[in-house]
Amino acid sequence: MARPIKETPILYGADATRFLDEMKKNESKKPDLKERERIRNNASKFKFAN
Image (cartoon, rainbow, N blue to C red):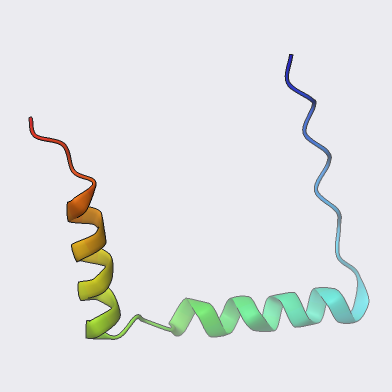
């Protein structure tokens, strides 16, 4: 039988502020073309024939 999943901790103070700042940075950040191509190539390796 699987173990129950623990509750997600709630962040307060400086930790919460740092988390929100990182989230805002990542929202506007887009992967460059080389990174997108690398991801696309790796994903194509795992596609199965229909």
